[in-house]
Image 1: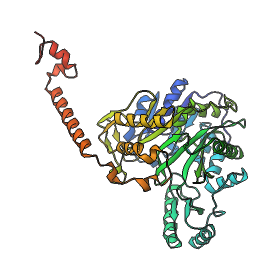
Image 2: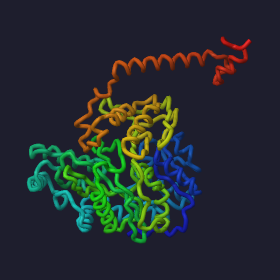
Image 3: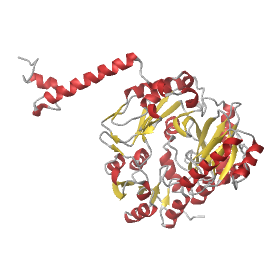
Image 4: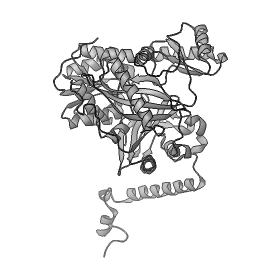
Length: 508
């Protein structure tokens, strides 16, 4: 077990990440009077997290392996600037037990769970064993990693098709393949092993029963070093593409009070059994009969954490820092009760009309929505050059409402207010999703897109296309008019210009 440094109060935090999560952490640090230290790759030199941080330091060229995923450069920077803690955000080093251990050995507080807890829960088979000891329902699976495709076939026949091949060290949807029949097994085995080896340098694979049309529901937990674990509500994350979440909401529309109570108890038992400390997420699959089964634990802050913040009023980054410093949960065993409903739409630089192909380039125009119950967690600004090296997430649009229908309508309004030009994006996809009758009535599963989405669904109606052409023409006319102004008056109000007698309509 790694020894966690004894730090009375954090004063300087290096954020080992980029984009919107780095911006998110910086904002909490500033509110707490803690110095924020950003790191950046060369393409991110003018990124928003660099502009907002108290200090910022370069760590290498664009490829993540040479910058954000280079532990020596990150930790050398932390030591050089005399940081006393590292916040990993999510992705990159957030669930890397070796990095957390190295931080502890260097006297740096890793703002996350202890390294040994990350290691145990990061291995899916070890995590299943913890869940078994906690007496939490498990999906039937092989007892351990499989030696080869023949052994996989034997396990799959015992469990019953369809099955899922899963990487033991997996995460983020990598190293996973659905196998419907034995004839598909050999090809799927090679694909899953290859992907697992490339992503995690670990090609151990096990077999698990595949649940048809489940809902993906996760529990937000917060635990301190005193043994207290709090359940902060659940999140519905069923709208996914290739196991990657696109939209999340809380509470889960399928839960009744009894299910929620049992769900909360199961999540907290797993955290206590694992000796968890910090913010974390326990993920489950919910079948059509309302039975839930343990899936995995994410030992970090989740991308979708803002929806929990919106309904509880908590700042989860601040809570991470408090428990990392050794404080007990300030609310004891009685967390703030959730209020209302929140929905998060991930705004991605992807083209949904072209198989969600990632996009890069300059953001020419950006206008984010405002108004009651609307929050934007963005990592980009107008004029920013979106790099090709990283995840396609640009921003997160989060809305709150007193009930789900008001939150859904607020999401539609906020999406309509959003302007993003210069790169392909998925705003039109989210408009389609939020307006879809199946989504409006909360008929959700992880197969939602497969059952409802086609690129043709995003094609504008003739009326909408005509409105778009008119708007484009008016915008072009406005731009030409601005250029036609005398140089000394560009950027000023045309009304003031007219009042001075310099144009048509001037007062006489």
